[in-house]
Image (cartoon, rainbow, N blue to C red; front, side, top):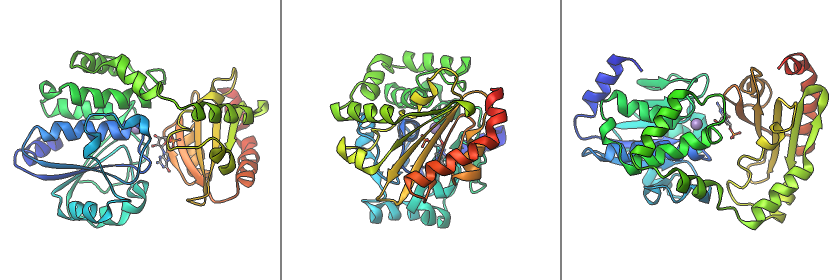
Length: 339
Ligand code: 5GP
Ligand code: MN
């Protein structure tokens, strides 16, 4: 974000504003952490601030400071729409295009509020008056930290803000192991710990609150794991029946795709999850090295994301989706085998 934009935003925020903060649909740790981190920061001034999420999120994120103030657009549509229509400023966090908010797309697109985007996904849309987009960033939480710093307010970061931002950096970097984790990321994490983020507690709250059924579901996913050695690829399927058998709750499949990538020699991993409610197969793709799952997802699965982590969907059956995936792999064999 350039100096001109920062000073304009500073000017804008120097008077009381009605502010709405929105993350993407099916919000993850980075989406919830960044919106609540920004919420606590903006609340330090006299603004009216509301976080509106498109829909529900996993219970392992529901302890984060400010969680109880979050409004859900799908179940509180009227009040959310009123707040959006009435907003002076809408911050859109951790997504690059309005369609990523699902049913919130039209109301956001029509809103006359000043939009400010903070996001690290590839190919950002051009809807915002102020766009802070940086695909090299580990997480939107790292960018919110930078945003607060650029506004000259690092000193305002307190335990609540630090805790929120820590969550998103931790979850989006796979606990600081993905290649997006830089020395700067670690320096920011160090600052957040100094500001009161309790790293051990946060990790426990997010990762060590599994139900027995969730681990059984993981067992089922690992049993279903298949490897295609010639494409250095592993994939997992989970049918709706399997999800039901293990009492699936939102977030239960988070991170499961990474097990495929942990196999020696594998550079591309996928998970295909049947969602009969939405009538789609949800797809998560992960890779190592330069193989871009963002491009693969854009080309074949109506999605996108980052070079090494992307999402997508398919309207075919689970079996046909896997068939399609297997059929396109040979076109990538050369680059997959060069990784
Ligand atoms: P996941 O597989 O965890 O759903 O998504 C992996 C990454 O890709 C996340 O950063 C997520 O926000 C992003 N992502 C998931 N689906 C889409 C999509 O349809 N479009 C774009 N641009 N990014 C996506
Ligand atoms: Mn993110």
